[in-house]
Length: 255
Image: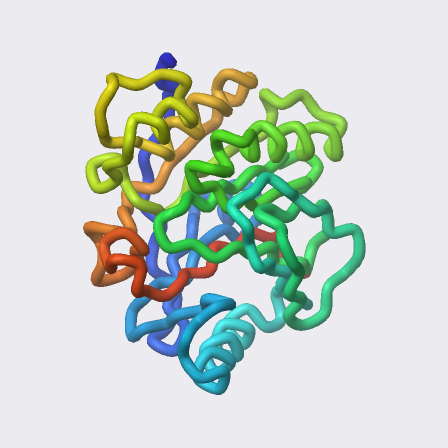
């Protein structure tokens, strides 16, 4: 597959020690949209299935909610399944809403912060700037091979009644290709071909290749890697499966 042309950018740290965050300043400046992810500094684990005591997890969630207070009335997140189900949020959200079995959320309403948890999988941010319609996807290799990227782009285009070429996409902080060696069956599932042996999979590039095939051309990807930038982020692979989760988020503020 021909590689889609994309700019590589770095999300900038703008949080606090109580709630470390990295955001796409470009999206806020150009589109008035907040797009970012929490950091893992200080063990800031927001995983919904954390093995830690509930009190510790909820203390971190409260710190995050306080960090976005005033800009958003609520956050919607899901217990994810590495699938392709995306739900459109049609009504305002107050506080923290946890849903079941979704790997993506979409909305056109201000004040709703869409969120997914990640620790190597790619958070995919989709936006139609003119209408404000947006979606946030949790995209591991299973979701990508199942078509979650295409489903998200189709949903945003349909909801915005827009040409898909007018949608912008960013592949956020996740494991990079140099750190992600997988079997040939995984590579084939994602890209449609393989070399007959284990190889390194550039999942963010594969996602952008799929987006480019649908006509998107405003595409960026993060320069951070959850694995080799492990002092800042959580990585399931680098930790051997014993790690926390970052919270990727996307929304248009109320003011």
